[in-house]
Structures are given as structure tokens and as C-alpha cells.
Image (cartoon, rainbow, N blue to C red; front, side):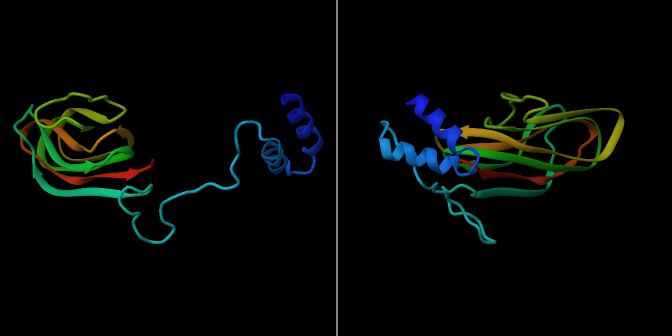
Length: 177
């Protein structure tokens, strides 16, 4: 079978139709499996959102003026609920009106005062400042989360400050599988 495929490839390689001829060879000779003639893709090609459970589904939570927890304490800015599947999660934020020396923000599946799962450079960022800042923005883009069941995903925040900041932004997710 392998020799037949190599010969078929060599004889048809100049025509540009080698894929179709190999597929037809397998279908004609029923080698114990089939190569299908089409791919079924779900989603939407219009200017709308894909339906729930379909590739391309989009979920977001936008927040504005969310007060920071006590200095040095971890808090949840907002959260979204995601069903089973693979998701690309993005966290975009802007911190304002504080006197802050350290900022940590990340995407997590653990709520409350917990840094479980935080990986700086993957699902989170940390900024330490030599001087205090009062406005700062950043994003964590396309962090992949694979879920086997419905789960809540949190936009986490941790600030070290002398004057408490507020946080605005969004956490969003797009189903990729």
C-alpha cells in the first residue's frame, strides 16, 4: 500500500491534483479507513455572534470603577461562566486614581483571596514600580483554558498601594473548540 501511494504521488505530483488522487485511491481501495470529501465547520460567517456551544461563541463581562480590595489582598474584579470546551480568554484592564507601587492581575478558575494557578507571563502580569503610579493599563490576551465541565473564570487583581485605585476593563472568552 505504501509503495502504491509513493508511486501515485510521483506520477501525479506534477499535475497539482495529488491530494484528490490520493483521496480517490484510498476510497477506491478501501484501506480500512476513509478520507472524507468535505469538512464540516460550525460557527457564523455573518456580522453576529455564534450560537451557544458553537465555535466562535463569545462571552464577556465588562466592569468599570471596581474598587480594589485592601492593599496586598487578592480580589475578583469580575467573572464569566464558561461551558465545557476550549476557550481563549482575554483580560483587558485599566487602573486609575490610586497611588500604587505594585500591580498583579491574572486569569484564574479560583475565586476569592487566592493566587492559585497564577503564572506570570502566561495568564498574568505583575508590575512593580520604583515610584507610585496613578494610571496604568495592560492586557492578557488569548490564554487557553480547556474545560470538561461548566466553570467560572475570574479576572483577579492584587494591588499594593497607599491610595486605593479603581479598576475598569473586561474579561472575555471565545470558544475555539
